[in-house]
Image 1 (cartoon, rainbow, N blue to C red):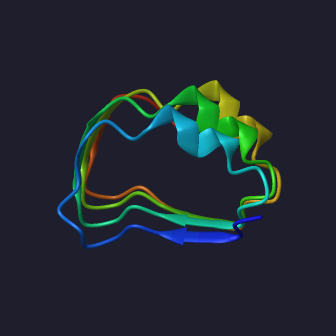
Image 2: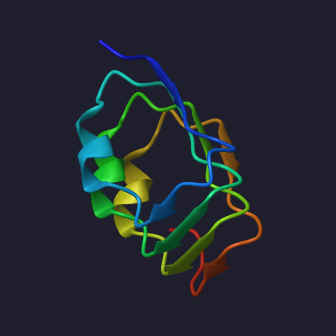
Length: 89
């Protein structure tokens, strides 16, 4: 069971894969400093053990999904330098 996934600084592009939501035992997810764009997948809300989520320095746009309210273990969140259009749920 994967507990940590750091994809930062890899020049990845496209949308963030919805399949990341299947990593339900993951406590750290980092995709910082890439070229991800488009909306955040609602499936990330299934990662209920997630404690750290870093999404900064991409081109992610749209609202932050209300499913992020399910991330009750989350203690560290970085969203800066993106194009979000709404408030944190």
